[in-house]
Length: 209
Ligand code: URA
Image 1: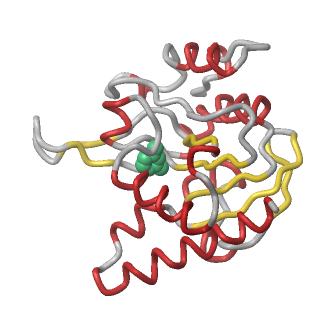
Image 2: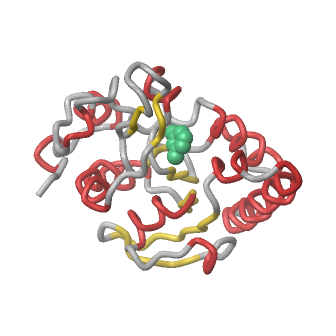
């Protein structure tokens, strides 16, 4: 089975973990991607945001949520009263997965498989063990399936505080939609979609106290 486990150093701090993740060959996604995009933020962060996988911009820059979805996420966080700079931001999968409609054309995001999410799980587990966030914000269905299992349905639990054991630790989680889904919404639905994301993040802000 694909797994990152042999690449995750034991007892490492966050910088050492990030460096090791740069050499991960735990699944085939490293071959086509530019680089590993590890989580960003402080070990002192009270909230950890978990997305799906890096996008085109993140793959080029090596940082999570720096592209259009990240900009929208930052605006939504600020509106909900969560300081984006104080959050730890990461993804369920640490390499960009994509296809091209034609050679040398634009890279089109492709959803990671359950095998790839499972393979990448040891990195997320290591991040959780080091950061020990008070709350995890789950951004969309892929992150939800990676953290809570394949039965996860974002529509059923968004905007609620869940208590679950994740990678052997009791965690509190607030699921919401992925910020990309707001970008993809039709013009006349986008404002409501954005406000829905903000409302869920307000639940997270309240849970943080
Ligand atoms: N979408 C994600 O899920 N993660 C990123 O880092 C960027 C876009």
